[in-house]
Image (tube, rainbow, N blue to C red; front, top):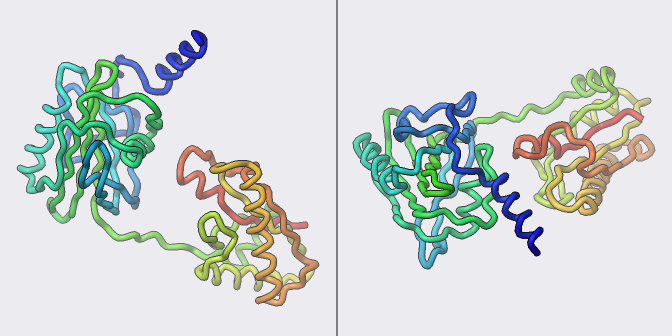
Length: 311
C-alpha cells in the first residue's frame, strides 16, 4: 500500500507540475493583443487554431454545469502561471475591468465556482499542451465569460483562474468569430498515378465515414470518381485498399473498423463504378502505421485515412 501511495504522489508531481515558476515564456508563445497578461505571469501553455469550437459554462448549480455556450472561430488558448501572492479573484477582476473598458460585456461569472464537472475539466485541461486533470482540485477556482465587438472582431473570452501548488494560474480562451474557410482538395487521377509511381502508395483523405462507422458519407463521391478514373485509365494496376485509424479506443476494435472501412471502399468501387473485384484487396491495419503523432487532433486526423498500395 505504501508503494502504491508513493507511486501516486510521484505521478502527481510529474503530471500536474510543481510550485516552481518558469523563468521564460514557452517558445513561440505570445499574449493575445487585446488582453495582455497579469503582472509576473509566464506563459506555460499556448495553442492557436485557425478554426475550432470551444465550450464555455453558462450556468452552474451544485458544482454541475447546467448550460454550455459554444463559440467557434479562431481560437487562442493561453495558459499562464504566476507567483501565488496574487489571488485568482484579483486576476479575474482585473481582466473583467480591462475587457469592460474595451467594450465587452460580462455574460456569466462565478467566483468561487466550486468543483467543475468533467465537461469543463476536459476543456480547461486538454488543450495548449496541457494534461488531463484526473484527481487534483484547484483552490479558489473562478471563471468569467465575456462577449462583444472589438475593432472588426466579434469576441468571446473565457478566463479560468485558480491556485494550485502555491502558484496562481490563469487559463485564457479567446474566440474570434469567423466562418470555417478550409477548402478540401480532391486528389485527381493524375495525382494518384504520380504518387503511386513515386512511392508505391498514396494516402487518400477525401473518403469520409460516419463516426465509429464504416458507412461512407456522400461528400466522398468526388474522390471515388477520381480513384475509379485512375483505375480505368490504368487497367493493369491492382491495389491493396488499406484502412487506417488513430489510436483512440482498443486495438482490436480499431483493427476491425479499419478492415470494414477498407471493404466498404472496395465494395463501392466494384458495385457503383464497375471496377473488377480481382483488382482490389481490402486490408485493415488499425492504428499500427501512423503518419503523425496521435497526441493531437491534427495528428489523429492524419492517421485516419485510406491508403492505396500497389500490389
